[in-house]
Image: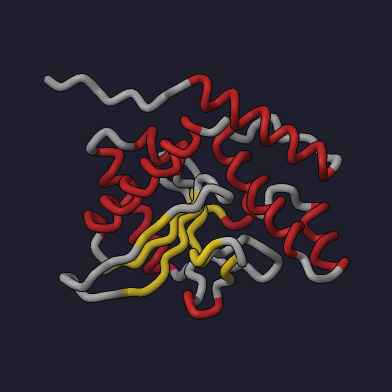
Length: 198
């Protein structure tokens, strides 16, 4: 019998709580008591990035009153807890002057992915959890951005970026096992970035 993998690392959780509190302090709000530290950490970074890039006072005000980027309203249940699944248009995702990597920030116009994409992601998370990666996804894949649907055998592109921890961007083929593999892969990147952060 194998020993379950242990992805719990209390310094990461402490770091999440401290940085989340600091972001909420900027917005002059408090972190909800029931929020999981990893979820609150991810969503606070979406609010911080969205507020920093807001081009008007209305959008800035939206983020200031929603330091969770409205994430609570966008969740879908999974075996690792509520997750956010969106399907942004890759061609409309912004890029930063300091990085060629495209990204998507939860905002006022964000809607959840289609019912099929939600079912696919829920099944992918369940598959990963059955293979003992549930804790990794619970802490490091809060937001999944499904990009292009491709055919099995095509090259799939996926990534995570440091300024939006807990967020994974990925192509998919409509197969839970393949998506589960890619979520695990990029959750590992999110976990590695967090462990080495100052």
